Length: 167
Image (tube, rainbow, N blue to C red; front, side, top):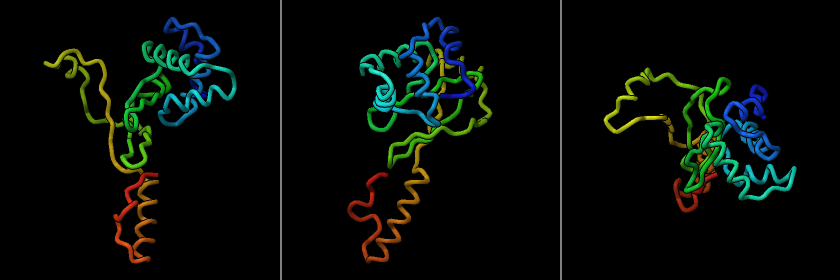
């Protein structure tokens, strides 16, 4: 659970009743350093109390609707969830690894972007700008370099069968 956030106050500020299950879902999201998938949220909450998977999804939908949680695209067709920007959690970009599918939160960046310019887009009213950087994470790069060293030493060609498997 994020030690800086008072989830009960956040819920009440958005007109949400702070039920036990809602607080557990929010605390699960807040306890992760990076966005987390709904199946992981369900498993974590279910370890401490009986809860239905559908209930977790409904809570997530409510938290997204009330702008307490952000829903992002994860690996494949899955969705991941993270705390929405608030006084303790500034807007920040994310890095997604193309190999293992992990999404990492990055420190807020300053691109010199003037939000006022965005509100006057010919495309329509812009409500949010997401910055998602894609590449290969350090963990996968380390595994790749260890695999390449072993394959080279064994006479196998780097990039051969099975080399592109993720983490």
